[in-house]
Image 1 (cartoon, protein in one colour):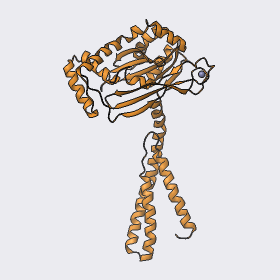
Image 2 (image 1 turned 135 degrees about the vertical axis):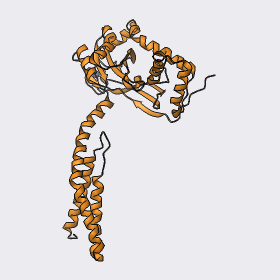
Image 3 (image 1 turned 135 degrees about the horizontal axis):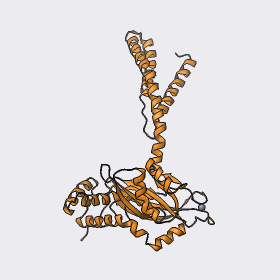
Image 4 (image 1 turned 90 degrees about the vertical axis):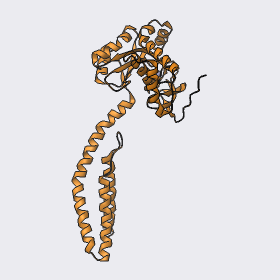
Length: 342
Ligand SMILES: [Zn+2]
């Protein structure tokens, strides 16, 4: 009897399409349906996946029938699978590349899943391995699937997602190419170097399908951008939003960090000397002067604290926060001066 899985501590996550606007008329897409609601176990976490599909809201738009899915949600696990693609690929690799027995795989997988309070049976491992073999055949099978071709034609073409997964540390990457609008896996390939040519090789079976390509979603590494531009010139290529935000944030963050460091270098020494001087004067000052010096000391300590404000990438800018804090201190000092208390 199979034990029912429990998913305590699962992270609930809502997935929406990476594309936010209609490819035909440019209208903002609206939520149309929940494609799936399921649990996925990956090496890093247990996720409760809520996958929402969107649609163009214009009834007379030629793209109105097209349902947009999230490539990221489809990339977590194969349809009908609870164990994630990362686990599936790892099983395939251990079995085929390292010739491990099912028992050995079972033992090492159980160890890796233990921190998540998850288990896997030898039967499930065999099942994952069969799926891995099927994955490697996917490219040849999809071409002969007339119902699928018909669906692609109705959508006006394919929206491709290019996803490189590293099952284990090392330079081996398994490339998965999926058609996002139908959620269909087109091809899976093992590569050890990510050059323009190797990406083109991975995409060769997709080219051979001879179907129009509406757009491409990827992590947008240089090699991927070049390969796609050569295979399908002029096709829109959207960067995975997570990577885009991280990359966009990096530039500003680095600049901001540099400014922050300059400000700190410029002020730290002075503030430190000033405080030491204050401490010296406080030791010998009369009571009234000492209480005045104590006020200045509080200000100086606040300035020193502001100089140590740190940022959190990608969007927490330490330099800006530091400047705001110093501005506040400055305003407060200016008010004191106006009232003649200094
Ligand atoms: Zn539209």
